Length: 425
Image (tube, rainbow, N blue to C red; front, side, top):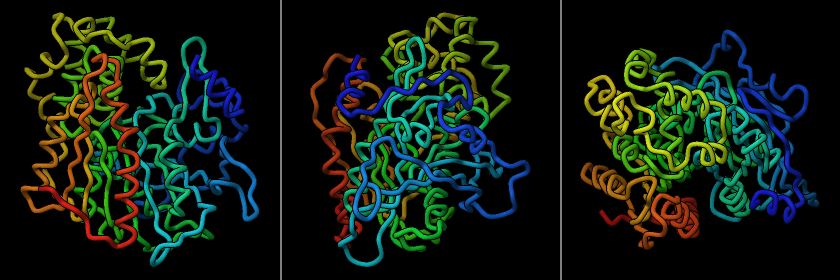
């Protein structure tokens, strides 16, 4: 109902998308765009493979061009979690607003929050529709336009990554530390390669994300010095980062976002196929069906179909999935490999977290900031003291995101304007 109301208010029609990988309702060639060439062309991580115009659903004509900017769909080369080359899609938006700050016009890499696992959920597709409907329950709104358009209004170039496997063939490697970090950093490289944009090659870069995006940004921040040392990374905003998947899995179980556990397992199976025998031995028929189901869903549909269920329904022993994984050494090894906080950011970081976050545990965000501080990083930790409101509803996760928007964007602005970064380590 809320999605229909938003469509009426904005004047953007509901687009109907069919479930399944690569589904779309766009132009005839849109799905073809998402099929990477085989083999991938020779090149380096961040190289642009192909581009095409991307008509934004929320856009108005302006004297100097469309507002808030001119969008280009991109496919760029990156590296997966096993160090193999892969192709990632995304959207670069060249801003209509003037840049009035010092030096060359900067770039912000926006790492999206949870979109889902179906290819139709890719932000580069959703930005062309804003709202989609997959019968019978698949309502989806591209909520990242709020952050993206606010950043564009300040004159920054903005590039939004789709991550590994979201839009392109294969499972989306949801919350995979290395794959997401590479996708974020290579998005900056790709955007700075595009011809005819207002940003400068080699200009200042910031990264920005909340929830899944906060984890992707945090992971990127701590490898940027080694993986992409040529980028002029001036700062990273990581909101509610799921830095410890074990703690996050325990907390999200039984909430409206139980289904993201399915996203996580599907993604881990792509990056670590030898997990399959363990999954088969410990997940029952209902659990296997859930994994197949969420693999083709956007997050709105996953909330409606899997939300508030508990993983005790999906394991052969009737135990929570966290308990089952805890006694499997291979599973613990993989969870540890995806832990964020074992490396050191070289640029300043702002970490936000709600004290009553009912999806991504506040405590593990505190631990992340503390780990970085202990190794000499410049970290500002900001806690949103929001009371617990209907635990499990996601309110404790969403409200701090909205309340922290101003602080996050002002912090990014200060980095671009050369203001010394604060630290409360």
